[in-house]
View 1 (cartoon, rainbow, N blue to C red):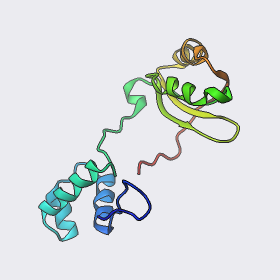
View 2 (cartoon, rainbow, N blue to C red):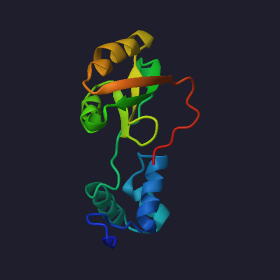
View 3 (cartoon, helix red, strand yellow):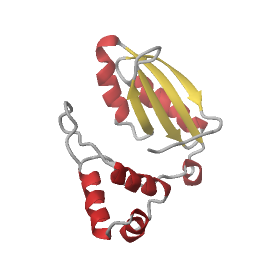
View 4 (cartoon, rainbow, N blue to C red):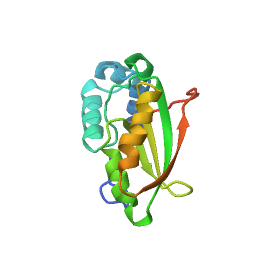
Length: 155
């Protein structure tokens, strides 16, 4: 795993690393021994590569939850327009709101896209009126309710 030319701090990953990542994406509970058997290498080698990939930030292991089973019935994507000189400050304040599960600064019609997870529509209304709209620099927003998730990929 060598450093990529011209990109400080990033390391190239090889085909074995990619295979380890791919196997974990399919089943995050695979043991090092099971992966080693499939790759025809030693479990120690898989363990070393796994640890290195986690340490260098190539991936992290997390639990993926099903919001509906946790009592969250309302998911929405919110497009937010901010005052030009306050985009990053607005984004930082939105980032810190517990309802926000995904946040990006973008180009185009909206400066910021935020995905929120709320218990119900009343909870979403409270988020909008008592949290989002009170942030200095938020000019306007448009809320897109999730009706059905057709595809969800974690890579």
